Amino acid sequence: MLAYPEIDPVALQLGPLKIHWYGLTYLIGFAAAWWLGRLRAQRPHSGWTAQQVGDLVFYGALGVVLGGRIGYILFYDFATYMENPIRILQVWQGGMSFHGGLIGLLIAMWFFGRRYDKTFFEVTDFLAPIAPVGLGAGRIGNFINGELWGKVSDVPWAMVFPGAGPLPRHPSQLYESFLEGAVLFVIVWLFSSKPRPIRAVSGMFLFFYGVFRFLVEFVRMPDPQLGYLAFGWVTMGQILSLPMIVAGLILLWLAYRNRAASVKTAGTE
Image (cartoon, rainbow, N blue to C red; front, side, top):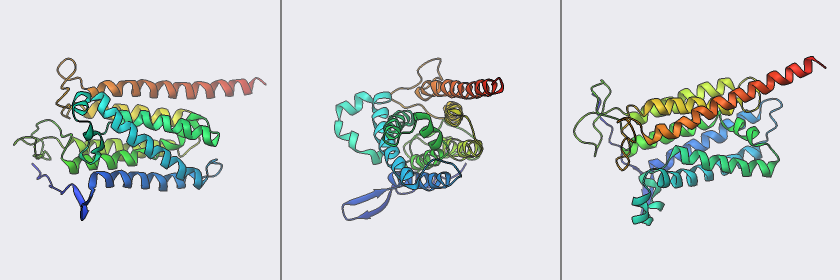
C-alpha cells in the first residue's frame, strides 16, 4: 500500500484570495494545449495561424468550463445543486463532467469554425491531438482534491483517501490521467502526424477516450448520489462513454469510406 500524499488543495493564498491546485491544473492544461497547437500550426500546409490557435484555446476553455460544470449538475447531482444553487459557483471543490465539457467544447468549436470559415471537423481534427494533455492535468487535480477515488483494493499501489474510509483503494484518478492523458495523447498525436482523411483524427480520439473511460469505471467508485444504474456495475460514466465509442467508430468508417470512394472516382476519370 502507498501513502496518499495529502497535498493542501490551496496552492497559494494571498490574503482572502485562494488559488487552488484544481484550477491550476486546468490552466496548465490550457497552456499546454496552446503550445502544442502552435506546434501543429507550424506544420507545412496546416492552414492554421498562431492567432487562430490562441482564439481556439480561448473558445475551448469557455466551452470546457461551462459545459463541464453544467454537465456535472445535469448528469450527476441536479437535486443537490438546486437545493443550494450557490454551490454552482464553487468550482474549486470539483464537480466537472468530462462528457458535459465535451458537449460544451463541441458547441464552442462550431462557433469558432463559423468565425474563421472552417468546417466543424477541420476544427475538431486539429484540436483532438492536443486535448488529452488537458484531460490528464484535470485528473491530477481530482487526485489532489482527494475525489473520484476507486474501489477498495489490495493492489500494492492502493491508497487510503481522506474521507473514503480506512480501507485502501485504487487511485483511479491516476489511472485516468495516464490513460486519458498520456496514452491517449501518444495515440492521437502519432496518428495525426501523417495526413488523414477528414473526421479520422476526431474519430480516433472519441473511440479511445470512450474505451479508456469505460474500462476505468470498473475500478472507480460511482458517484454516491447515483450509485450503479444497472446490473450492479453499470455507471453513468459508462453510459455516457458508449455513445463516444460508437461515434468514434462511425467517424472513422465515414472518413475512410469517403477517401476510398474519392480514390476510386479519381481512378475512373
